[in-house]
Image: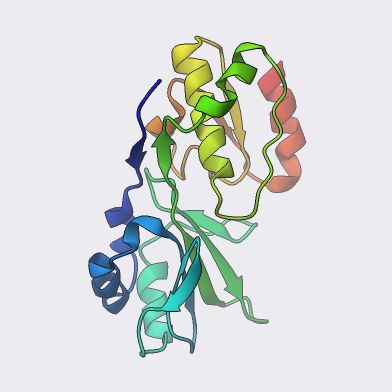
Length: 201
């Protein structure tokens, strides 16, 4: 088994946030436990952790602050999600009635190696596994680690149908967190079933 080893490319996310938010988060004592950063127009930036949230500044987000981040991240898909190239971070947006983006949720994506010891026996028995949990509790991280274990250690052929690029990242090159697994991206959510058929054929 791998010991717990975390890879979250935190600096790559920080580099895309407004400068005043970057400065605060770089020094934050709980940055290792950060789940999300909320950037809403006219509101104070907020950090969300597993055990609560806090405002990061007295300064409220302006159009310029949002624009700073929007210019640095990838385009938003039709499901209002984007990512940062070669990372697991996911960014979703909210829009006003004119379809202008007026809020961002920046979720920290982490590859944590060694997290599935408790269900490894199920993988070895070829049992089905259902993973349930609240947002931000590590479901995607576990799926990523399962894919890595199956492909690298159990030498299985693994294809991931990655609907919104949250398992293998927002890049044409899949994140190393999935090991030797291969990934099929889904161009539009409504085409997911076709991609799933393609994966099993």
